[in-house]
Image (cartoon, rainbow, N blue to C red; front, side):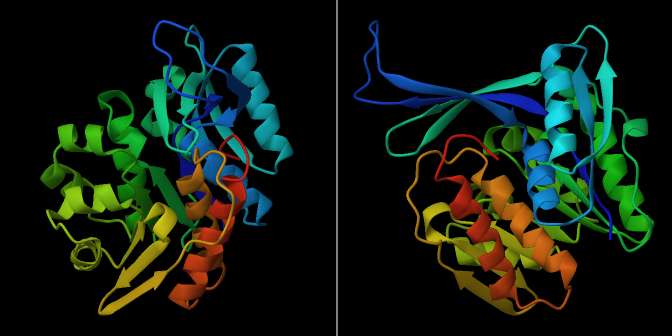
Length: 290
């Protein structure tokens, strides 16, 4: 089965902070530059897990874009990346506090230029994963919506990650739910699940989303993850690990879960969750999303 991943490719500049905040002064930090972008992270993890994957997105005509493309190709990702003349490749600065919490500074650059014709579709029976960032900006939105609809009508399963509560709230919950109604699998975190449903309790939110989508998987960070489908609700705890940087943990989880689920559609939900949680636990041990 071929998987097409749609969304951002970026350079991650991960700044792991030490000590106490020091406004107007210096603060120790360890700084790492890595390949990033939510969709690129998912694609790279899928490839490493042995799942054939194509990444659809855009990069700038610069050294960063060429380097990221080479890195992804080396990782085994097939590339459907359009180079956008005059646009910079996306860059994300991640500020990581000593407790692992992070703040993201995003310059999406060429990622905002994604067009409908940039997204190839797998044959019937394949799968399309759409990063929510693609839907949450007016410029690439049509490409993301078209990918969801064409995949669903073409006999493919579809997964969508809502991506971020702030842009999601501005987009409009009712609008977003309508635009993603054809998805097979939704992958929100707890805050996104609560926002999309209006439920205060995360389990109630998961059940509510499972009333709209065949499967809803809610990422709970240090508390693990929930699988909801029909009347089934399964929780699995996070795998014990040392947290250095949570950047890309959700992307790694999505790839691990998708690899298990797509490899065996009848997989036990607990096993699929554990596959995702194992991948996430591995990623958070070190700086960077992959």
